[in-house]
Length: 177
Image (cartoon, rainbow, N blue to C red; front, side, top):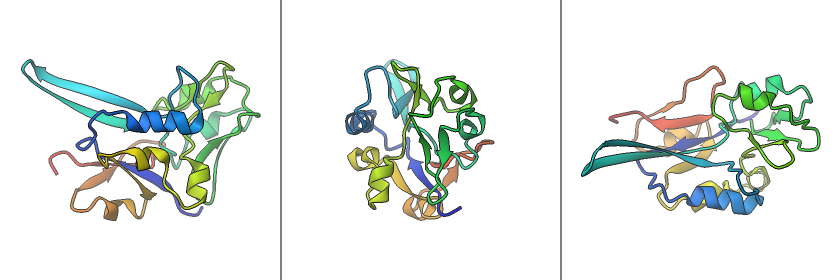
């Protein structure tokens, strides 16, 4: 396999503005009720000392993508040149096996009951551009690059790759670093 693209998601920088969610929906013309990118927010403390942490989540374009392995119609594939997991909507039979297999809840189902998800803005990436979620993030909470580049792009922050059997292509800051 060639390079593997992924994300560095810095929850310490995310301000929960949801610009990444909106940009993704607009650029992909995503129907109401479906979100390829979502914000998971955790609140801690008691009023008046409340803090929150937000994490921008989407498909992790895993190296060992569970959705690819379970799709009976072979509608989900992993591109060998860049590791992007894509869906051939015409081949999808809407069985939902991918949704059950994905530990990150990335598969989404629209009115036609067929799977859809983040495609890492594959058309933009093929042109040498960054995904719209990354470009739109004014807080610089999202960084895009190859798995080899992402540690250097983190600067002085200590980061670690998310653990899991699917080997997600995502790095996050290490707590306390």
